[in-house]
Length: 326
Image (cartoon, rainbow, N blue to C red; front, side):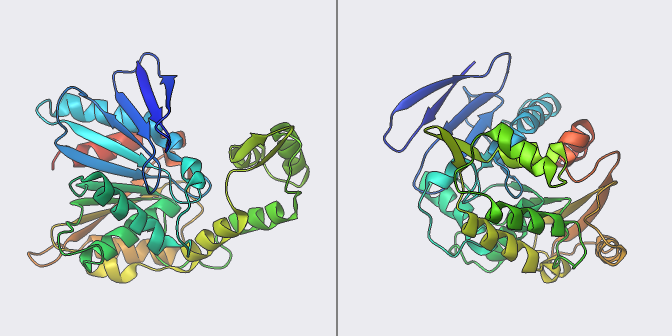
């Protein structure tokens, strides 16, 4: 099928996605870039799920999962017409070409989603799904919605999914130290990278795994006879530091009325300590009331931090079954 990518100058580029039953549309607006997918493009959508990628990722990382999610929801509830909006966070993916106001932190990353909803004239999303750093952006979005930071007309999501992201401050010694180390390594590299192959080889020579080196390499773009980063390195550091420092335990202890916050921990993840696990288990054991929402906690088996890669089928079963109940 064909999908159309529209830039700010309204020039039209054609991209083809073969053998896909899902309608995919990606375009530029005044704020962040995004991809919109629908299972039934010829009918008005009835509900929206926003998907937020992790640090140094992009919307394309979740394209396959979003298609499968829509197909599953369409099969389980033919009368509904869900759509997904996979956003590129500020300083990530195609949003790197947008001039977004600093500071580059979780508060503004969440506000970018609110600005997107307002700019497009959409209804507020029923579901927000965030992975890793995106999980904390989702929590910040819920926090700001609860406080009416985006205006009196804002509506909180009915479901908020936090995929393998510890909601509190990141403890020293946590695996996120590796990401901080990556940022320090990137600062030591020349601003002009000879090639992606050179970068991967160089990083592997410094002791990084090929998987991690390849992932970092996805953030390069070709400029003349060399490669350079698609993001501003200082802005990336600001976002990571905000992710590191922010805590949303207070939100989990008092979820907005009518909202379910679902925390998914990957079974083999190295991001969690026992204290955080026990704290979430205790919150999940409490039932929601008429005045506050509730917290749910589940474990995705056979998966490390990259949940959508390690066990996409298992993740789909967990997410789709809950979303189908809305």
